[in-house]
Length: 148
Image (cartoon, rainbow, N blue to C red; front, top):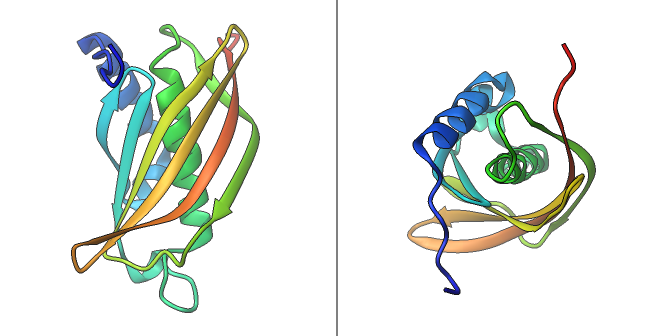
């Protein structure tokens, strides 16, 4: 049925949330997973001065990091236990200044293949109750199982 997102098993959700928690840079940014489903992941971060660029907007590096991390964790939802998602290509378009109290990254897998998975991340800021679409990224991952 279109629009219905299959749920993750509790084991898969635990595995992916556990992986997210091992990425020190996510923790440094204060990012949290707000939604995790099959082929989807949403991340959020509250604004802090340390995450801003010179004009007070969320820094592009924060947006790019969350776009990659959100898309990568969405990709991991479709990969088996023990797999990793390694970024092999990344493009981000900034659409509007990322001004707001909160940044939300909505990521979804577009195509999941045997070796490569392609995902899209859309960044939104929230300011005074208003949502602004501020960036879109397209990310390609190679799925693999790390050796010993």
